[in-house]
Image (tube, rainbow, N blue to C red; front, side):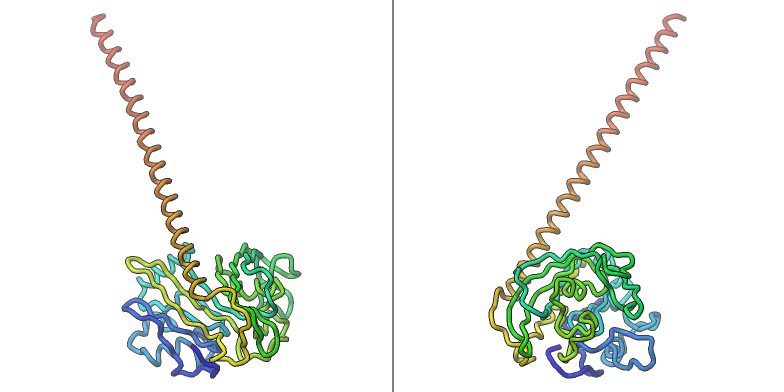
Amino acid sequence: MMTTNPANPDTLHVLYQNSDYIVVDKHWDIRIDSKMWYEKHTVQAQLRHHFPQLADPSTYYGFRFCHQLDFSTSGALCVALNKAAAARAYRCFKDRTVTKAYLALIRGWVKEETLTLDFSIGKNSTEGKTHMMCIEGTEGCENPKPCQTELTVLEYGMYDGDSVTKVLLQPLTGRTHQLRVHCSAIGHPIVGDFTYSSGTDNAPYRMMLHAHLLHIPLDPEPLLVSAGDPFIPTVDSKWLPQHSVRTLTATVEALLQRRVEEDRRVKEEESERVRKEEERRRHRKQQRSVKESEEQRRQCQEWLSEWAGD
């Protein structure tokens, strides 16, 4: 959603639609759904407003959201229109075959152009911070789980007079607030992230995190959607790029190519595993056959000996 204006029921931008799925470009200041009566503006309400005929009365919200985006995060959000479609998408997310990439503006200039952020993340049990996540080793961090994020620098520039870096973030795991916590952990919190800046970064009109790319390898046709780039000067004049490291298009193409190669490698390894297992089964069967043949010969010899003796 390329706008700095607040959300309303009409600000629903559909990126993709077929008989099984709708992918929308979620606005930056709207919840996906809510059970609170005072939460009037949600994606669920927008979908009911625009597509009342597609709502499923058997579900609580009327629509099946295949994944989550934080309240302040914008971008590609996939919605399944029936139970079978939801099951297919959920399987891809569970098997970690989905590719997601986020655009972000983060505080400061990141020295390394590519980074793998590898910090285990757990729930923060500290009083007053139970709505937050934290990295392993932080006081009050409970049940930390391994998490990885790939960071790629796109541009260096200034936002409202402060140095910032525009990056592409690819989560390799799916922990709550993962990207926000990881960026904060390396000393480069996301611009406008009030929660993970200890409540100090409250000047920007939004948190600068956007779900740019979503690829779900569905059968027979994969779902591939791009939600554009809202972090450009024509949308927000406070963002002034100064030095481009690589283009967004080339970076995304390389990411998708790596995923294709990884999927191919996984399939080849699985095929090799199946082949070896089949060989082991045949070998065991042959061994059983040899043993059975030897036993049959032994019994025949015994019968012949008994017959000869008679």
